[in-house]
Image (tube, rainbow, N blue to C red):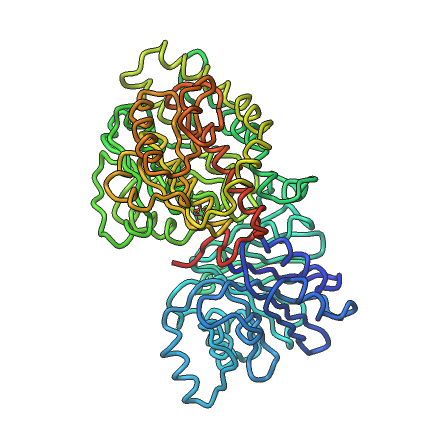
Length: 607
Ligand code: F6R
């Protein structure tokens, strides 16, 4: 989704802004632009398409040591040069970049137009710059503060004025902004990735804050001009983690890293002595956790499928009724908040607007909400009552892979912890700990055979549609497998429970309509095999993910990929991998842009 980068310092700004924008490409965008200040003037260059296109229009020696840049993911108005950011006022002396949505832009636009202002774009964002220009009297920080009091909606906003050289002013409400503190230079971006090449010292801005930066200092105030003391944090990862490291795509790299990322999610979080999980950061005592009667887990997309899997774990391991819900639905459903209900929000980015706003709504009603996030210092991680980082490392490919398996790992540990303080016996906890510790090795065994999945994908490149089926704890995996395939290959795919198939989706089945079934050797295997036979009776091609040694399945299915044996409940950590790899090779075979699929954004910061 939209990305922002701003720079003020002593070096030429344009190359730094362009490099920052390149690092933000992963978020998904359709146009980009920069505004660079020099000698009482701002030069604005903006273009639809890739950063490469923008770069080819920026003179190599563009002078100016301060400026702002933006990648736009269209919400209001089509994809074209005019709608790209930065937006300028009539004088060309003020430019702004904006992430978020201004909900009251129509009345503001009408009022400004009635005053004679001419609009060049169809965006909601352009009202901000004209409104600000009308309020500007030589003090950009003051104009920003006055402007935002007129705005309804969400914004991460950064502005520059030609008459205030070397100054960036930003404001935030619902869309992230991070200050980067360099040596004699400062950055202001929507995402640490944009500036990690230059500094690891960062300051996270909060909603309602306005920040004013020059090369040497930053000042943070609220809208009433009260100074806010800010803490400088150090980013724990470095540039190498956001590089491809020899892989041809980020997605391939992130899929391949999963033995390590699952291991990291577990590291230091297992008590062999108690045969249990150890999760610091929940901020709840054992007594409080024992009083929990219900768990509700809110999230979106792949994180929602992780939530469904987690709900299954909590019920079956800890015997706690648990549900997964779309955060976007809960926010507007006037959710009932009972003291015995523990809420979780899951978000890889920690910035997803649907999830963040649902969390705020729950907290307003007095709920305890724990966050499970990957991005350290993200808004959800900071605003939740406690929680767990999954420590998957930066996930750059738009399609989520390693964050999914790391989130599952964290919930296995949480479920184990809850189970062991309730009904689970020591020997069962011990068996689970031992099985969990073996998972990374088994993930690597699967990854070592990814060429089998590549060959399988090649065979099914003809498919226009795909059905994904699973049961029990692998039902959400079927949904995730379908999501992975559709988002990166654009092949229509849907997932459902193997049992539900006969209640409707079976009507789709024909020789041209393949199905991917997840059939581990668990208590539901026989039921799954009946469903497999129902598909074969209708001549549907079927690919199966099965447990090694299950040769009976190979006799019925068209193709089988075997995963190593593990405990029934842990199979999702293994079945996830071939689903991801299969989708990956389908997308590659269809020549798709695997890392940046069309229309999608990595961090969805609008509702
Ligand atoms: C799918 C995918 C999205 C995200 C969803 C939530 O591969 O990446 O469906 O899972 O947008 O994102 P987070 O987890 O950042 O809240």
